[in-house]
Length: 463
Image 1: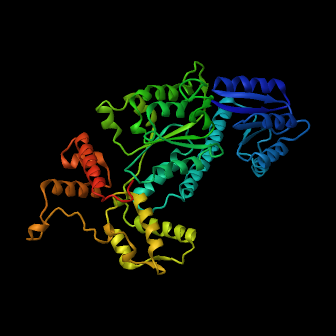
Image 2 (image 1 turned 180 degrees about the vertical axis):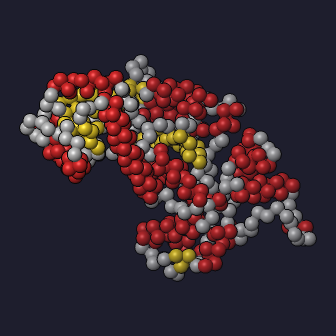
């Protein structure tokens, strides 16, 4: 069963016989002819089970068993004895033995006992792993939220935190993608290494290429000295590629090669430089649509989308709005030294009713503004931005006879799409199926409405 076993017996011939017989049954077997030699071997190699004779010169088999159990309780011990009495069995079990086998010894019976012992050990290791995963779920305390959607996110993070595979975090602008990336880094085995973040939309292609991959002296104008890129700076840690959907198409082949080969070639150089990083990418774009439209390479999409995490919009998180608001309020009040302890009931009601197009980032900006403006211990409605005070739910039906309250068909469609997205928790693929659109059509409409909202000044705090 491909398990490593140590056989301990002062009879070298019997050791050799058991080693040969267990090897034919799939066990990787080593031998020791004394208790002291067995303890030395156990310190050197990670055996999954021990088989020891009871009667040996020097250290007795029961004493060896007791010492192994005391120092390596995760390694099961099977005792072999010629004295198949009840008293011997009791003594072996009291010493911590997993099982005992009597002579004359049958290798098949020993192999069966070893299989059970190894499976028992591996089950114990799996239980410990699951306990660690559960603790990891509770450890993402910087990701505030008790909604079902956020519990799913935290569960997902706990399950992938130990992996080194690439992660793609998707979600609308302001949903907290970098917060998730940093939390993942802090809980990973790479936490002692650097966390390096770069926006793929912030720089033109030539500068971004130099930023990511480095350059040699004289590689281009103003390259007065050599510089290692961010892949090398992040060595041993995490590289966060924000807004990866805006990565210039001409740089995508080079990024793909870097991720495949785990090496980078600086601009102007011909020597590959090795790096060891975990890549976490993030985007608010629908990359599948970008792939279909030829704006993003399909092979690169699959390379970065090994472990996907989709963050829900704030409007789909229910009462998390107030949890986040209180979290930001306490932090901001402490920072500015004001005695502000919470929200008034009416302010909380308005905040729950608001759609939060700018998501968590807009909420944070709102609370910072409210704390600065308030003169009371609790934030009041008048302390909130006007867009929140005056917000009216985007209902589709128009109940009024006043022509001034009637809207265009475009606005009716926008409200209905917003309502469907709210009901499905921001899942654009599901929303497209409900609406009867293809994914690309929905994506284009949302981009157009978002651009219109920004141009009209309705998206303050959403960027």
